[in-house]
Image 1 (cartoon, rainbow, N blue to C red):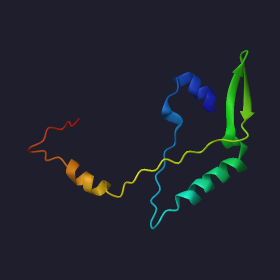
Image 2: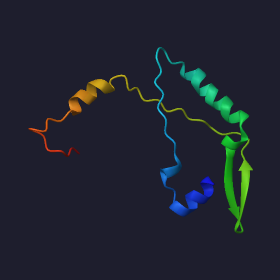
Image 3: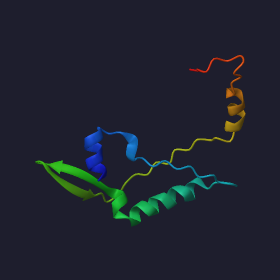
Length: 96
């Protein structure tokens, strides 16, 4: 289905399902990364791509998939949010 929607919508991110998880305490990035890699190894569907050849669609299950785990430290986000608060009596409603 994702392949079909991708073809209809020209690679829109409409099928992406973003999620946010709040983690309390220390985060073991190595263990988190290995957990995702194990999950992908265990489930063929997470290693499947779709290939079109001569007008026919085929599934191809990849043997391995590299899982990048980009990390952004958001611990100081609340401080930055306070800087972004607008005063409607002094600030115009647009910031760039």
